[in-house]
Image (cartoon, rainbow, N blue to C red; front, side, top):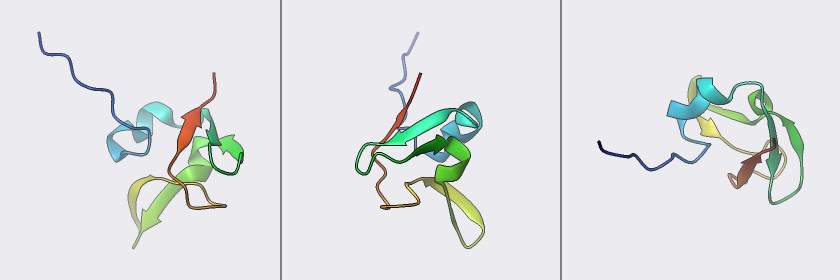
Length: 62
């Protein structure tokens, strides 16, 4: 059985699994639900980024 590497949280494949969990930016410390971090380009979901400092260094809080 092949084990897959875990995807970074900002990759779109993880979006549904992460919706409405608490997330914190590792750069500026902003924390909110993951829906606040969703990034859309031309109306298309492209991943997760901090709305305050544009960092994608995010961490899911347990």
